[in-house]
Structure formats: C-alpha cells, structure tokens
Length: 340
Image (cartoon, rainbow, N blue to C red):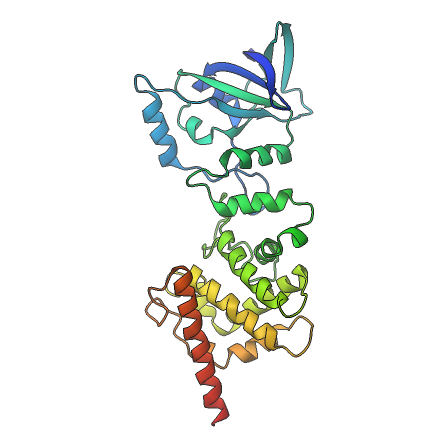
C-alpha cells in the first residue's frame, strides 16, 4: 500500500479564513491537485480553460537561476471519503495527510503555474484554504483574478450569475444572455463562449459578455417605455432570434462568412429587436411570427456577409453606423412596399 503524502505546514489565517502555509515540490503539488475548469455543457466548475502557452512560459521561467513566485493558492474542499486530514502538531504547526492517487487540492490560483511542472522537483511556496465550498472558492477566485490580464470577462460574468441570489433583478441583461445560452429552444443554446471548456460540435459565435452588453441596451430602451420583466425580455429576445434564424439560416450557420453572430451583428440586431418590440401594439411578449413578418420585409435582402455594407465596422461608433445602415434598409423596404 502506497504511503500517504504528508506536507508539514504552518496553520494560521488569511483575514477570516483558516489557511495552511508551506513548501513542497512542484511534482508533489501537481500530483495532489486539480483545476476545476468550467464545463459549459453541465455548468460545473469555474476555472478558465487551460492555456498551454501560459503554462509553458512559466515552466521556462521558473527553471532559470534567480527565479521566484508568489505562493500557489489551493483549497481543501470538504469530502466524505477521508482522502485528506489534518493533524495538529503544536506551536501553530500542522501536518496535511493525503491519500495517494487522489487529487484533493483544488487549484484556486496556480493552474497555469503548475500545468507543465509534473516532472519538476523545484520547491514552491503554497497557501491552502481549509474547507471552502465550491461557491466560496469561486468567489475568492474572482477577487484574486478579477483584474487579471487575459481572463475572460464572460467567465467572470458567469461566476457572478452563479453567485447571485436574484439575478433577474440584479443583472437583467446577464439573465437574458444566460437564458439564450441555456434555453433549449434558443438558437444560441450552448453557442455563447463563456470561457470554460467549449461544448464539442458547436462553432463559437459571440461571447457571453457581448450578448449581455447587447441585452443591457435592449432592456434599457424597452424599459424607458414600459416596465418589462427580465423574464419577458428574455422570451422576447429568444423569439426574435428564432425569427432571425428562420429567415437567415445560412447567415447564422456560417459565422465565418456572415456578421449576424459576430459582435457588430449582435449589437445592431438587438437594437432592431428593441425597435420591433416597441412597435408591438400589445404589452405582451411578441411571438416569433411577429418578428419574422417584420424582419422579412428587409432582412432577407440585406447583405450580411463579410463583404457587405457592414464590412470593417467595429467599436461603439461602428455599431451606431451599422444600425443606421440596417434601419435605412428597413425604411427603404417599407417605402417600396407602400408604393407598390
């Protein structure tokens, strides 16, 4: 039977949380830990997807003379299988005993530093929280990495949604975006890039952050006229995008060739969705047929390709210009119909 892995640590506190401080080889820390990467299909986990280049850069650096790093941060999550236990040894010291072959240390902030150090005996400092739940661990991860360069803002948005007690009231735009990504009847279901492990078999189009920013403007404009709930706003936006896909299936299915699922297209079309909703005569959620009938007057004849009138537009100014172009196309189509 293999011996237990034993780490001798100082036991203390980080503000109001119990922690262990210690030193161990990169090899042992790697073998005893895991990164809880977000699985977008199931919603489990919270970490960003692994970056081989980031990890390789650290491996090269840490082997150089004079290199150093701040403590790697872990958490010992509560478990029912006795895979880890602490022994107090006096004078503020403790021993962490871990069953070999079971990864019990969750990598709160060290995924990329440890990623390619599986074969290294370099001694590294570490700090380990004791007994944080996954929810508490996620909140601390956001505090540590909220300003980190390269960390997906969509991933932080997703964490905020998971931690929120009343998302529809606190962040209606995020509620709408997540509804589009999770609702099976939505054309965007599992197609927004959140920042975790991508769902297999589906091409990415826009990010969660892009959709929630577009939804924020949609909700703001509609609520300036009547108090639509986040739930009804989500249903209206879903019905709108179903209509878009019904009329423009090729444009939606070929994101590399057409712009409706890229940032400029998402922002502009969500403004058009607000236009159409505000023209609806009743204070109820319009059905897909309503949006399809109005979109059908102009959208099918508009050139949504990369080489069309929206080519090269970007940024806030680009969105405004794109919206003017699309609204003008709709106005001309309506005049044409009116004049026979």
